[in-house]
Length: 179
Image 1 (cartoon, rainbow, N blue to C red):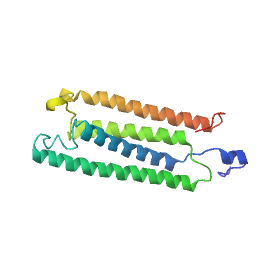
Image 2 (cartoon, helix red, strand yellow):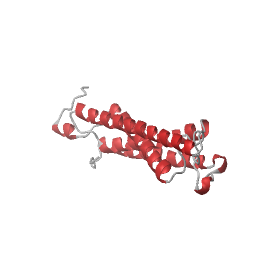
Image 3 (cartoon, rainbow, N blue to C red):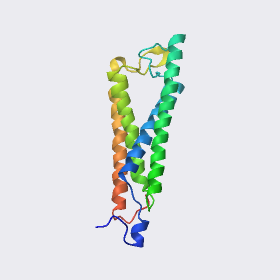
Image 4 (cartoon, helix red, strand yellow):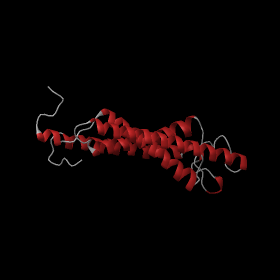
């Protein structure tokens, strides 16, 4: 069986490649990290990247934390850019357009994977930082915040999988193929 489209209707059907899906996941991972550092580290100031190692309430500690947050932002921007560039390259390599819903699902999965990684590795395993509230009081004494954040993050992964699967099902014969 040939991998090339046989009819005009086959050529109009949108496609999705493994490379594009992984690229969208990489984009989602970087996007989530960038949103995390902008919203939680800079705007809400619940924690900084290395606030578990350097205190947030001394000038030297704050300087180190801001530097780490800035480098982390740059890293996440690079990861996001790589993901977006690879999705664009995947689009350019196909004869037919890439299906949007599976790519959006993969990006949501990447978003959730970053959050699970952050809670398990950065918070729990390495102890780089823990979210704190007003006056420097931990939002979750003993790390109780982390199980809740992991649950929310897994909901992002599940939502991404749902969006991905419904996009794939639409591609394979459903009359609503506007992904």
